[in-house]
Image (tube, rainbow, N blue to C red; front, side, top):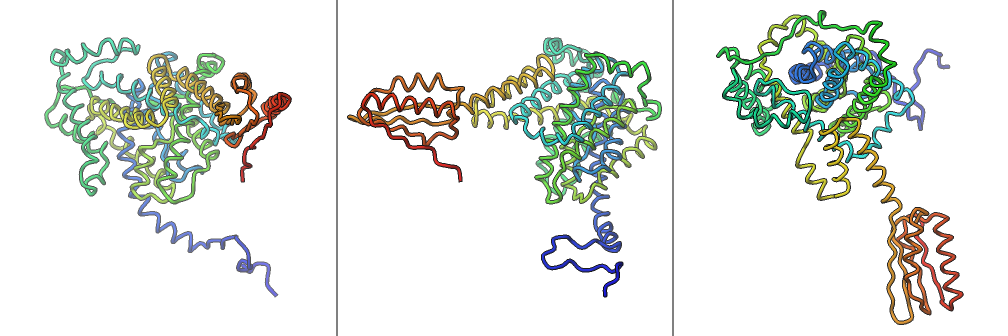
Length: 512
């Protein structure tokens, strides 16, 4: 007789795996600890300059970018969802955050981020995370390209140590003067040289041997530019990083009233949508990089929302899952979410114990990092390939990118989605009607989706079919035939029969 406390082995046909013992868990922890520890250091080295660079480019203090990276590691990183993707401030949100700060002020940033996080939490709890996979790839590509263009144009100014204008039109108009004024502005030539050096390292580093490429390119580029700046005491602007505690900007009662402002609500919704979409697309890309458990999209959206709520409470920046850091995490051999949690620990320790080291980094080097990131977001090769594959989809991508570049993010995304829906509706209802006559025989062939939306076109085409003794109505190329169109075709065939024609119909083949 078996006691109640005895563990029985799974019976025949059982699919339940045996419960891991404490010894199994300990061996698994030891086997993953070293790879996760090493990967966390790599991710930390990649994330540190990007956290600072994204914050500075957004018009926020550098400390807020680091705080967001810490929250992304410790909070979002510890929650279930995606095991290996890493969260933090993203270049894709730079334009949105900069615009929000310019419109509503830095004190309102916490409210914006908390609101966006709450929307993400609600979407995740309602199990709507997978809906973001249904967004047209052409709109996403256009969104990324538009953000990349804005990022490139904006960062060209700090790249040479100049202050960038607020409006995009002014940024474009002042570009010629920016180039010609390099020699006349104090320190501009040095800033431009450091920026060009940083860009060259970022571009050439992937071409070096694999053993050398084990060190992250952003780390090498920023560290080298900082050493050059310090050794030669170059007269260039540097980042200013102070105490994280002093940078905390908790939303007060006066800021909470902003939730009733329609303009604030629009910014909150835009940040929530863009951050969620970027995180979900990053998750899909990261899943293809490893063989571990796939992302649970709804749980990941809850994790991102929780992280943004916490980040917003601190008055910091919005976060997303970032493909650059996530790819570095996977490529460095991470096995569990411990690597991304540890990267948040290293960010916290570095910012608390060694903040003065960050003050050696020139702003032009961070601007060069973001210009490089913007170019990767634009991805001209992919744009050309898409244009050759599908011109209509490429048109949507182009319109979305140009609208984001010329107007704003929300308008561009909404126009892109509208065009994508219109294109899908047109293609779903697209039908061609061709006929061919030989002697007394006429063959009428329909191809596509025969729906009521195209009934006028179908009727006009059928009226042009000449009368013949034998008429064959070929519907084998029809993918969908609704009742309204079927009734119309039956009426047409009946009319031809009354006119002394013998009508035969080849019906669509059923889908197996």
